[in-house]
Image 1: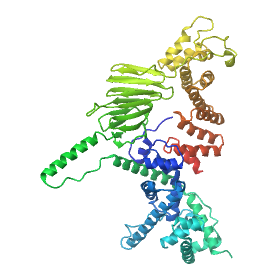
Image 2: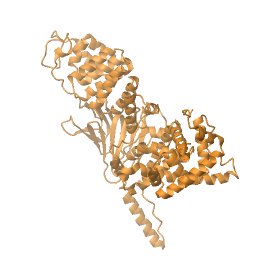
Image 3: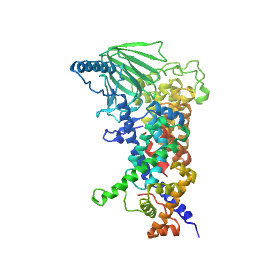
Image 4: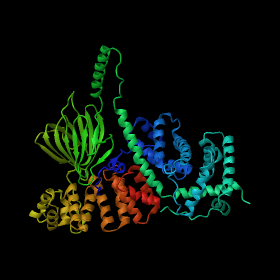
Length: 219
Length: 408
């Protein structure tokens, strides 16, 4: 086995040099280890849940160049609050809740930035407006452009129900609201989305003709 | 007509699928991981530091008394803080428990807050397992470390070094410590001061003073009686001792010369001498360590068949030994790299993991097993191995291959 010669010039090189001590144990033991400051527990915690949290952020936000930073933020907040986690068997849903809050803050930040765009567009150019490279990417852009115009609570309701495919009770719980309130938010979101889709030919076409996209990997 | 919410559900599912198909996810997750762990390390380091005290206020006398008291408390606390350490030329903050690897041939320095220093030679691996106000406990997993322990300013020092089955208690010295995981060979050369070495195969704690050197391995056991009939039709009649002379009864120069040549690192000459002395017979008399050396020599100098013979004899003569597991791993490498027999390689790497689930070659075995299964056409098995590998070694040398397998 040959190790490559690297000089420490980047965070990635730093993490190649340091391999955290491996933690072995179940979820409950991992939580205990995090609380006790076990040197390897943070890395294991991240590796076990990062993909899920990433998906939650990505589906809530759409394309956003800040997603890696937000992913870090979710896990840092989780470490800060690990002592308050009561039910160690619901770690994943607990992390999802934190991710939703972080995403919500990001959406509000983007809304404020959109106001600034009117005064200084060259400084506040959104980082997520890339030319779509496939039909699937085009549809993603269309959907999230509409969602970006919605109030954040209605956006969340729409994403949890239709993109993430949650049941109504699960989605309401994730939003930390009652089922009745969630249903009202969802109804408003559906109405807004369908009205917006009528004004966007591409989106209207996708809704009417079905979504038989050829999902291609991003080049 | 289809209900609007059914159409929205279909649209949403397609969006979900498009998001899942994005290949940038793993790169972004990996990027965030590096940042997250760096933040964790920084927070842990900050938590270990003495909190700043507010400056004393009030009358000058009270101010002076307060400053003096603060200084005394700070000094008392400083002497009780665990030592901290920095790694590499850039002085990055080290964390207890992290694996520190010296890449390639470049040595890696470690500097400790109380003045001690280690230099890990290129290719080596160690962990600072724990620190306390008196020193640190260091695990040398493989390689050579130059150690310089600073004299204690306050109280006594205590440093412990562990290397395989050996431990070294240090109270303030300079020495070079080497450990090779492959054959569990240990060496210590003292420059200043004195250490005490303990190990499973030592009669008791062994002091080593300045100017002295100690080299040993706990694996040099006498070979069990040889069962000639099991090995080859050419084997002579059964003998009572594993340390045999040539079958004619007259010892030849080559029968003992190969040992000396191997022991002094002259592998090619040792291999040739072993061949002249009848390679199969040599394998029947060699120790486990010597069989590994013969196999290395044979692999290095182009004789795969000889290497396989030595390794198979080792596994037969010394079953359940650490060298037998190393032999399984090496047979896996030969099967993969030289014979391109991937199914066979899978069997050998799996054997190593079964025999040494926490052995020093475990990470390498999981990574190679993953690749061998892939080449042998076992997609499902290779994906399972890739997941296991990334769980334990997210930054290991096979991590990118594992992610490639999982992304398909």
